[in-house]
Image 1 (tube, rainbow, N blue to C red):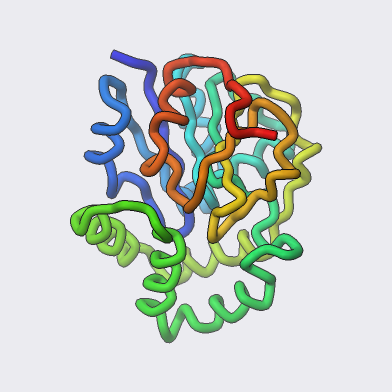
Image 2: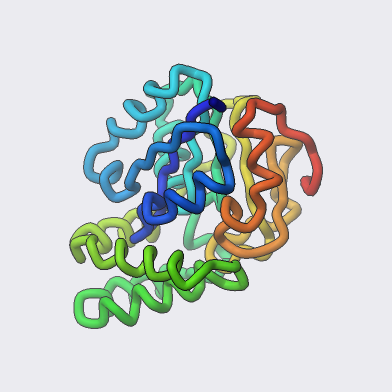
Length: 231
């Protein structure tokens, strides 16, 4: 049995809806799932989940989940000893020149209470991009997204629209991998921002754990990052 992995999801996206897919892509290991909206309500859940890995497993924090991870690390009151992955990492969702200026998040916030299904559908289409998902996988995401209270989704948008974490505020950690793409439709990382071998580039999209398991699998097995794609 391989080392365990905890998957921390994103906005309106508990990754347990893809348990079967993730177990098939990353076999022979224990998979657990942590909801980003639950962490937003109870930040201590993040450290608790990481401590359960006992240093041997990996916490994979995706999208808004990565912002929660980065915020916790920057605060300096928590030092995980497990491996970390920031997949489609976010430090400043409304970064200058990015696809989500604050005005867009404000519009989304205003529309959500009265056009919830349309807002979720638009978000899903952006997150999906050119990723290859089956109809069952898409149905699973749509089904779980409907389970969130609108207040929880609004709280997540508030986090995305107002939180900025300085990359330099994170302590150097050789066990922290950043899996990012300049062609991410929701959270692009310009290639010039890739600071070193712990940053691996994937080609496109917002779902690297589904589209590029060959990049992530070695890290889940304990390999050190290699500067392929970074630069």
